[in-house]
Length: 458
Image (cartoon, rainbow, N blue to C red; front, side, top):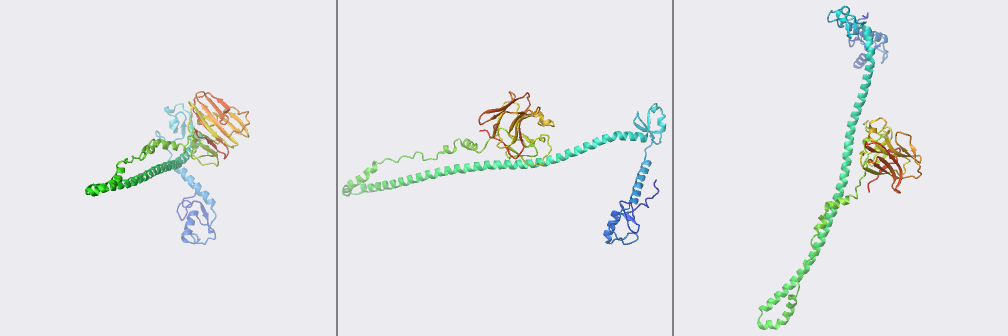
């Protein structure tokens, strides 16, 4: 045991072994933290023991005392370890040897017992050293795994937070789309009701005019009838005197035809209600469009920005995104949301004035390997030259000089053929054939801010 005692190595303030001791000019030592707290409480830089005023607010460290304290603590730990050293459960002796066959510590008496006859032994310290050396690489591997697990857990946390961001953003866009639809329907409702009200107004006005006209005619006819009835009640001489005038007045009234009923006077209800929902839907088609391919943001390289409707992609600054397995990291590319393994599928892509781009398909198996472009079939445009690339061989230059602004991609899964065309002239640019029944996902690679746009179906 070390010659120093605990009292010799204890701070007079905390009464414990010195921790980071400092030395005052008066030769007294204290834990740095204890001294600073003492001075802070007393508001004066004096030695807690002799009250000597210190000229330094940051006394020097007492390295010699620090080393003594550390040695004392090590010795104390070793002594405690020796005292708690386990004994042989059979002979109550110290375990000095290690049996290689039984892989356990034994005492000297055990070595000579029948249980360990012809066994090989090593001193405990040697065996411990050997086993520690064996355990260290395993520990290192476990520590590496711990770091990997911690990284994955960090990514899990980031993914969970990003899910919330995705959900909120998607909900906002859904509401925006429905708001547009609601606005369209509201405007259509207003227009249809307005047309109905206008027809009601016109036809009501027409009927008012006809009612007004016939009311005048009824009043005149009624007046003539009353005057004639009065003549009929008059004395004979008076009646005969006025007879001719009476007949001339009443005669035309008896020959009048009744006014005709008004044709088309009623609201044309069928015009307003007939095929109402179909007519509205037909109008809605003018404000909506369908894309044969929708981009999958979960596959997009972190430097790519997708449009809100997921039909256009351009390259911009890098975003902080979760490390999900579907995401492409090796190239600034993005995939379509749906893969195809049957039928024929066609989509047009506006490449515009982009000086660098690539279009094609990616086999589903490529999504599970590290180099995600290994099974890609694509044509690329770079430096004014078109190339065809299968992902497993060197790209082949295509003998094309024309600059296309629109590229048609046609995937025939049944014939296992991928073709590229110029839609304007219907000229074939290149055709790949492949031998796979995997799902093939549309592939888009964009290197700069010029966007690639998937065109709507006409």
